[in-house]
Structure formats: C-alpha cells, structure tokens
Image (cartoon, rainbow, N blue to C red; front, side):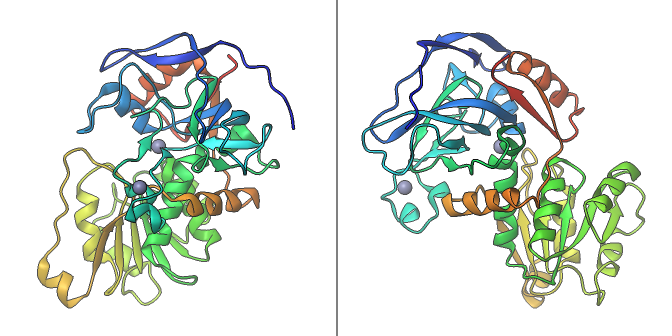
Amino acid sequence: MANFEIPSEQWAQVVEKPGGPVVYKKIPVQKPGPDEVLINVKYSGVCHTDLHAMMGDWPLPPKLPLVGGHEGAGVVVAKGELVQDLELGDHAGIKWLNGSCLACSFCMQADEPLCPRALLSGYTVDGSFQQYAIAKAAHVARIPKECDLEAVAPVLCAGITVYKGLKESGARPGQTVAIVGAGGGLGSMAIQYARAMGLRVIAIDGGREKGESCRQLGAAAYVDFTSSSDLVQEVKQATPEGLGPHAVLLLAVAEKPFHQATEYVRSRGTVVCIGLPAGAYLRAPVFDTVIRMINIKGSYVGNRQDTQEALDFFQRGLIKVPYKTVGLSELQNVYQLMKEGKVIGRYVVDTSR
Ligand SMILES: [Zn+2]
Ligand SMILES: [Zn+2]
C-alpha cells in the first residue's frame, strides 16, 4: 500500500456568491469520514451544470461557498476506517452522485440517483475543482489503472449520462436510435456508445460541420434541422422501413425538438429526455401517444453499475472524447466561453496549474 503526503492546504476554485466569479485560492484539505475517501484530483471535466451551480439559476440552491466540479479523476490518498474495497493508490473518480443513504427503497433497488438524501458533488457538497476532494467510498467510480486520467474525466458525467439514457431507451442491438443534439459534447459520446451497443444512429443537429463530425463518428444518417424542410419526414425516411427510430435521445437544450420527437418516433418507441432546456414543457398529442403506444420518459445520471459499465466501454477503446485541457486557474475563462456558447467538445482542467 502506498503512502501519501497530504498537504494541509491546496488550490481550489471557490464560488463565494451566486453568479460568481470563481475565486482561485488556497483552502484547507479536509479529512475523510469513516465511510469516505480523499481523492487527489488530477483532472476534472467541466460540465454545463457547473456553470448553473455558479450562477445559482436552478430551482435547487447550491451550497455556498462552493467548490464545483463532478468529473474528477484522480488517486485515492486517504480513506476512512470502514472503507474495505479501495486501497491507497487506486484510481477513482468523483461523479455527480457523491453519496446516497444506501438504505431507502430507491437505493435498495439500484436507483440511488433518486435517493432523497443524495449528496451531489460540486452542488450540495464540494466537488472536484480542487486538488483534494472527498466522496463516499461506496459511490466513487473505480477507474481501471490502464485508463488515462485526463481522457477519462469527461466519462464521469457526460459518458455515464448518455450511456444511462441509451439503456433506459430499451433499444436493442440492430435497432435505430435518433440522437438530437448529436453534434455537441454529449452527442458525440452518445453516438459512440450507441454504436458500441450495436445500435444504428440517426444524428440530428444543425449545420454542415456538425454533420461531418457525426458521420465520422459513425452515424448512419444526418438530419440538419437548419436546412430540413420537413424534419419529421426526413427522420422517418432515414429508418429502414420508414417507420421511425425505435428510440430518441433528446440531448438538446431547446424546447421544440422535444415536441417533434413524439411525431417521428416509431410506434411503441421510446422518447428519452436528458437535456434540460430552461423552463421547458413536454407536449404530445394524447391520441397519438395512445394509439401508437409511445413511451415518454426522463433519464438522469447512472447508478454505480452503470458507471462501471460506461467506464468499461472507455477502457476497451470504444469511446474517444474530444477535449481540451487548461489549468484549474483558468476555470473562469472556460465559464465565459460556455456563456458565449463557444465551447465545442469538453474542457478538462489540470489541477496542478
Ligand atoms: Zn455534468
Ligand atoms: Zn437512499
């Protein structure tokens, strides 16, 4: 077992008031409780949720002061006395679900993301935009040693989330899934997971550039909503029998695609909502929903098993995440680019600079 020297202070990015900005400063390193581990975070992905946490614009208020971040990949450097299945030196990941009670009826049935007492990294507890972060040992992702900690970081939220959505869609190998928002960061991972799961992908997004990247990742068809005169018909025609895709994954952050999906999904198909357009509502005609037996559902983050499966696809080289790395000290610039809608792919922060 390795031994690690743990400093008393560390660099972190701290949200001190709603709306930010984040303040790059030294803060104390915490000690893990009996059922917790302390992870020396090496790299952390930056998710849109982190921007919402800083702005405080979601209905659920985050803690203050707050250290954000929930895609943290690093090394276990300390653990509580109850932790048995993790050793110092193991690689582990901080994900959105930092901990849950493990005793409620949701936790007992592997629906721990729905636990009423769930702890959320970088939101209700401090997250991974610091050099040393704490999480419940039961919930940290076990990252295989062969995985590059920098490249794997975005899998810890984005990857798990889209993989979970594909599982929730119920689509089986050989069937077709439409991915709305396929050209974005989540979308590019969703295309790769879907392909690895044996699904045929129809990518939906706007612009020629996004179409090219979707096709490079293996989408069988691309429907451009900016130039399509009848999107619903075009999506249906892109499926083998013209009956529509078996499932639709909605990663978009606009409301309109949520309404269109119920029109082109195949009868008995499933529409899975993942993206969170602010203040949006779902609308679908009851008549069609009934006589075409359409399922409409939401999908949140994965449980512990989903996490390990999503990491396994990555370890086998089936998922490549385009990312750009900057120092943790530059986090505010990343938020600025996000606000301006200029982020393509994923930003990863290196906590050593
Ligand atoms: Zn996230
Ligand atoms: Zn629970």
